[in-house]
Length: 369
Image 1: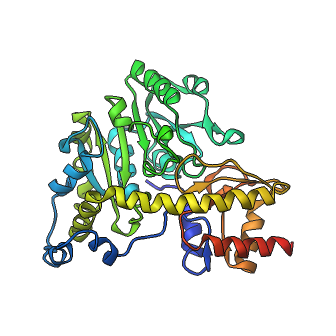
Image 2 (image 1 turned 90 degrees about the vertical axis):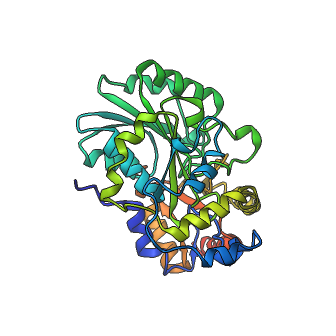
Image 3 (image 1 turned 135 degrees about the vertical axis):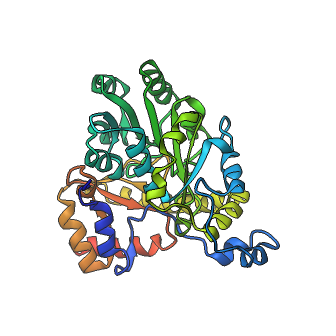
């Protein structure tokens, strides 16, 4: 297989570590190992005793129990651990689907949702979201996309890049459509827990639907991307039989230190989630004010969840805008072309603590242009 170049990741590889302000990151301010170990007496000593041998390929049992506790209808046997969300996406698409199958992907999306499928000979249809309405996909547009060869629907909620969160009515409609046809629903829920308020927090797809598969992990809402721990959760016992062997050809097992630290993190999940929510709430208020001051240039829909937004640049051509901004102001935004979503939007990330300084630099640059 030969996937297309991953536009977003190639863009980050070029600029992320040599640009002063990364104003487009999807991960929030990271937690240090020292801070994480400080959450629990005795954790530092236990960490020093972690064996650096191989771990169980399906994931550490204690960590799988901790993950299962996040869901209502999934036990530890319904959880498998992976080295980051990318590995989990790759394994699901290549093991649960076959060349000639058809999949529907909510769009815009993380590129691996569709490019991995396409490279495996799977036909992809895009379920376009209404960007003028904050990224809401219309259920009436979904059913006409379904074919006899359709096997799965992929969604992202909260969405990257738009920040849109599926409401209960849309989720119920989605499940009803999938259930009538026996389709998988694969929900990328990496940003689950970052919703603005309790009314926006819906059940995970694995709790709503017997053929629902939830993807989540420690990277986004926990502020622990360096652990590279993600998981799939489902009530369908046959899925893991289908995908069990593919990890043997990828990473075989996870990092023992990462699994220890992830287990510790989930024992203190509410503390970590609340920390991230505080940063997001504060920074989102700054973005609201920023875009209100520049309403003649930007169209802003306040995200309902996640760590990113997808504002529209009214003059257009964000490829040029982002290139100039990096070169002249040291501020990195990602143009919407990196998401195959036109050229008039940018992804802005608001989970980092240096966002206030980044906005000052951004606004000063705008004043000169």
